[in-house]
Image (cartoon, rainbow, N blue to C red):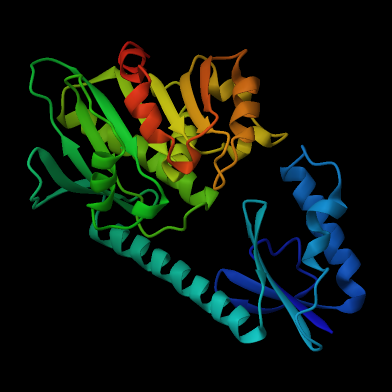
Length: 349
């Protein structure tokens, strides 16, 4: 019997690689190799997830089932030492998945090359908009080779004003520059403060890919820096909130840019690095965070938020609103029921 696994970390499986698909590679291994593969996966898993103590309960099911008499195939991605399991599938679906993923990677690489060819420096481009009050732009980040479409609402008053940033959920991934605005209008946010409102969209990158989230968080920081050169934004009053995928982006906006944001509200999303033995707690030193989750969330479990907030209590101002009910839509309860605006706009860097 032969097994297959798709990997990105070539060093871990270099003895088993037999074919390359661009940035993806495929490893084939025989029955006699199952133990070694299992040990490699287990070793890597414990490095990234030290909270677990029993490997058999975590990874044994990777090799426990047999699809038919001929082959069992597994798709496992390694991304910055993290792996994602996409289940058992037949051979044709396995290679189709690899080719689809590879095509996406090539598409992203081609777009990055196109951006770098067209622009010499990071650039904001104004576009036509049909939404009153919210101007339409795209930000081209030459450093990262990505585009962030965004909407922006300007202030009415004089002088420097706060900047409020809303980060959307996974359902709004794309580059239409509309879905994130529609979500913003439906989650229950009614901003009372006279402030700039920034609604960026995460473009053509895979949901739950932590590399994507980190790239987005760092590119967002550069976008805000460029907006500060054009608009009278109060650098000491820049705030960020987000739900689900946007909640993760909010966590990493703080983690990847220590001391930049005055306060943050991540909702319904865990912070994976918070469970790692390499977690740099000091990156949150002095931060002001109000996290929110529901115990009955069956999409993203709330226990990670509880643990991370516990680890942060000694280095920053952190609070957690943990609802008994609300599921993966608790943001409406939070935004409508909590006095978050009074707290948020009172914070300064």
